[in-house]
Length: 204
Image (cartoon, rainbow, N blue to C red; front, side, top):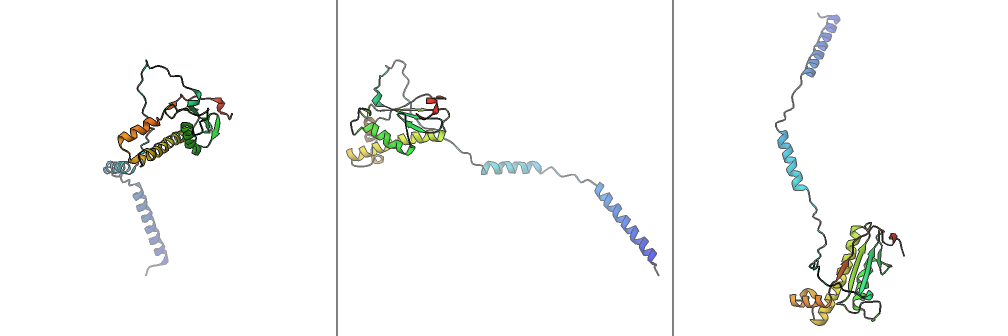
């Protein structure tokens, strides 16, 4: 017959053996296999290369005239030049008058056509010059809005003249017809060098 004292001694011995076994297990350090790390890194690299989208930002396509140092300097009348200025507050000013960017196409159209024969507007569509100047503090997207407004104006002029002259839209014109329309309404844009302060960037 086993007494209670013997049971107590047996339990203590088992407890001590268990603690010794756990202590020995903690001392054992198992090395981490690194043979597959290179494969994992390579797979992650492929994953990011496949899933990453690279934004391709394209600039404004502008055809510049051929530089000729011997070309004569033309004297332009003030009424044939429409001055557009974008200040550092992204405010669009046409002839020192603030307008909204959405109104720019119609303003340019009235300047080119001059239906009222105003002495302050262009004398002929072939002589109309759009002069653009911006402050260095103006934003890029607002600068693009100005260009878009001018392009929209000429697109409307070409389309209206094509329907009047040929009876169909500008997009349906042949290359010769498009060339004739672009000659009638030449897109002459003079872009001046940007400055840090013009009119102190303030409202007139």
